Image (cartoon, rainbow, N blue to C red):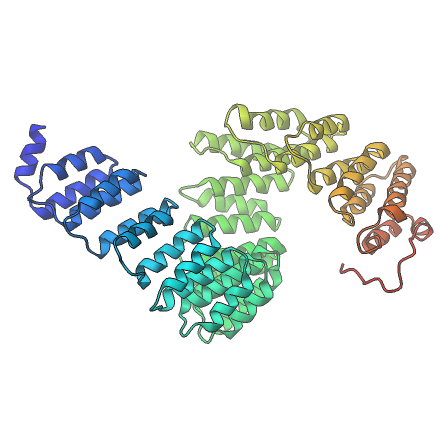
Length: 515
C-alpha cells in the first residue's frame, strides 16, 4: 500500500491511465480499481472507459454497468464500449433497453451494433426490427442486414436487400459472396463475384477458398490462374488456399509451380504457408519433401504436427506417425481430436491393432477428449482390416450415438474383404436405412473384392448379388423408384451376366442419375 501511495503522488492523468491499462492487461482488475478510486482528481473519461472495458473483458458485467451509471461524462467511446460489451455477452436486449430508457434515437452506430447483437443471438425478428427503426441508414446497417440474412440461410432476402441498397462498398460485395459460399451456393457466389467491377485480393481469395472448400479444386486453380493473368497480387491466404486446392486435386506439378511463385514473390515463409506446403506435398505423394518442409518450420503449431502425422498415416507409415506423435508430446503440444483420427487411421493401415486400441482409449483417459463419429469409423476400419469383425460389430453396438454412413461403410468394406455375407447384409441395411440409394452399399464390397483374389471369390460374388437382390426389390427402392445405375455398373465389373440377370425394370420416364 505505501508503494501504491507513493506511485499515486507522482502520477499525472496520462501516467494514471497507462498504469490502469497495464493492470488490466495483466488481469489485475483489483489493483486497477484501487488506483482508480484513490485518484479521483486525476481520472478522466479515458480512465472510466478503460476500466469498463476491462470489466467486460473479464465478463464482470455488473461492475461494468455500475461504473457506467456513475460516469459524470460519457463520450462516443463510452457508448461503443457498452455496445461491444453487451454484444460480446450476447445481450443486445439489455443494450436496447438502456438506449430506450435514456431516450436515445437509434442512429447508425448504435443501431448497427444492436443488429450485430441480434445476429449473434440468431434472432431474425430482432435484426429486422432494429433495421427498420434506424431512420437515417448508411451502408453499415445494410451490410449487417445482409450478413444476418446469410447467417440465417435466407439467401433470397439477402439478395433482395443487396439489390435495394442505395450504395455499396467492398464489404457489401464480400459479405454477399461469402454468404452464398457458406450456404453452399457457389454458382450464385461466382455470379456476384463476376459482377464486381473492381476485385481486391480479399474477394479473389474468398471465391477461390469457396471452390476449394467444397471440392471444386480445378475451378479454384483456374480462378487463381485468372487472378494472376489479370495482374492481381495474391497474399499469404491466397497462396495457402491454392495449395489446399492442389492437395485436394493431387496436382503436385501445379503445387510445385505455386511453391516457386511464392519464393519468387518474396513472401516470408511463415508457419501458415509452410504448413500448407507440407500438407500439399504430403497429400500429393511426396512425403519426404513434406517432412523436410516440416523440419524447416521454426515454431511448429498443432496444425503442422497434425499435417505431418496425417501424411505418414496416409502413406501407411504407422511407425513414423507414432514417432512424430511422441516428438509432439515432448515439445509440449497437446493433441486434439484430429490428432487421434490420424493416429488411429495410421494404426489401421499399419496393422497395429493393440496400439490403435490403446490410442483410442487414451483420448478419454489421458486427454479428456470425446470420441466422435470419425474416431469410431477409423476403429471399425482398423478392426475390419485385421479381420476382427466381431470387435468391429461390438464397437458399433456400444457407440453412444447411432452410426452414420461412414461407419457402416467401413464395416461393409471389411465384410467384402473377408467375405462375410451375414454381417455385410447388416451393414448394407444400415446404409440403406440412412440413404436409400447410397452407392457405398455396393461400391465398398466391389472395391474390396478386387483387393482379394482367393478361393473365397465365389462366396464374395454371391454376397454382392444377395445384397443387390435385396436392394433392387420392389419393396426397398428409393424414392425415385429405381436403384442407382452406378451400382449396376459396379456389379457388372465382377459378374456381368449376374448384373443383367438382376437388373430391375426401370420406369421409362426415370431420370438419369448423375454419376
